Image 1 (cartoon, rainbow, N blue to C red):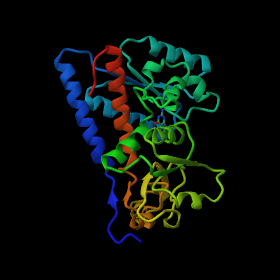
Image 2 (image 1 turned 180 degrees about the horizontal axis):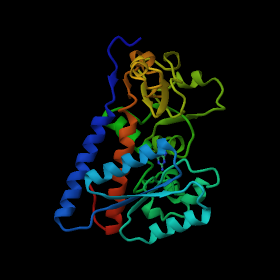
Image 3 (image 1 turned 90 degrees about the horizontal axis):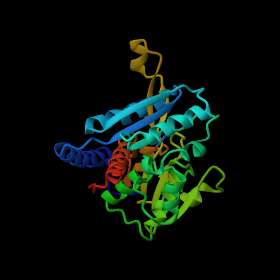
Image 4 (image 1 turned 60 degrees about the vertical axis):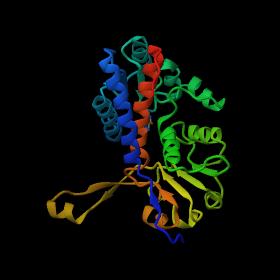
Length: 305
Ligand code: GUN
């Protein structure tokens, strides 16, 4: 057991620092009479969780002075209508960055859709050209937001990456795969684990840095980590709790956000740990704003912070 208190990685604070730096940059451009960057978020269908994330992204953009727009499409939109939407956004000079909120309905293949987006407007860094840059060890203008947020947090807390063993649990296009490449590009030794990994604990116990992007509440417990590990939680799981107060007030249940890490159990053994909420989540949004500004600057041929 770690005798000292673990340090909480304050994603909310670091994200706020990134956002205020962007805000300064944007007000400078505004005072020079420049058009503000434009971000369009494409939402397909009515998944309530996606709705919350999309609204948060658009609202944060507006607060910074970014012109943001939500393109809300029906969940039975055809593939060709979806392609038409992307082509219209590709051709719109006032749109600098486009994000297609995932997951998409089953009849739309995310990779096929992403290939129709102009890579120079790819706010998520999911276009194969941009993922290919990561694979080649280069730096895309707009790297995938959650992995970029995790790397930014590790750097903000001076966690050494070169030579450390990072174990990533999850192999999605959104988090696991691009994060593994980005950590490798920082000279970490990287292991990627997933649902078919044998003896997961034997892997996770070797991690100097453990990153869980599994989507299972409290999946990681203290027995699965090495003492003094740095533990990053990407999970945002909604857990229904029939809280006493809710019963008293007449409401049937309330929902609570919990991560993939059993925080209370793991925290005493960790050196650094992210909370949920307030850890990785706010950084994803801050990195989206940074990507939007960077894509705008590239399209305008000007330098960004
Ligand atoms: N769904 C969950 N996270 C993300 C993300 O970072 N980008 C997109 N486009 N969809 C998501």
